[in-house]
Image 1 (tube, one colour):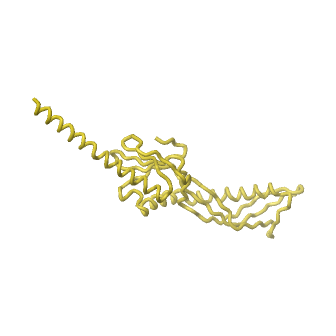
Image 2: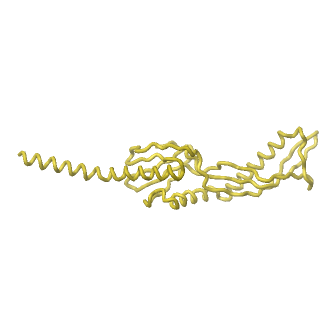
Image 3: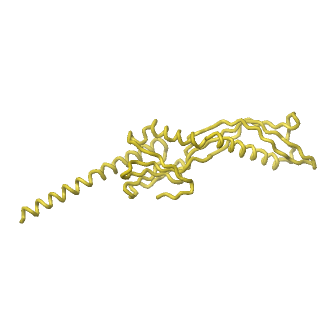
Length: 206
């Protein structure tokens, strides 16, 4: 009887070790992947293994720009000064940056389907103005000293139209491809196969 008990204990120990070993290996891999992201991107995604959070994400980099487009834009803005309405044309370059808000969803999930990077969809992060010129009636236009509000509104319209042009040029699709390329080029997943699940920016983390 004693021998049977000993055998049963040994079997249980081996069984526990057999099932615990894959979990241990996954945990070790999770730590290494977390460190690789921290080193390369100054951020750590939340890592989930079998529905259990192993590492809670932290980020010092709130936004990760993965695509930048230079947009040449011509905007027409109507303004009224001294009861005279005129159309001002705004010419110039705008640099539009798109990427991921890492303060939203940014998780790496290990489950029976493999490894999934779950991250919020790209969005426009900034629209930076370059050299800008103004014309009206075919000649250079100089804003009156009391037209600061109108000038600010004109530049805001210019930025919004540059933003819309960048979106029409599929900047979000490029941002997604560049994120995938970034992960592979820097080997952030340490050679492990993975897929990316893009979610809405208002999606809550698991």
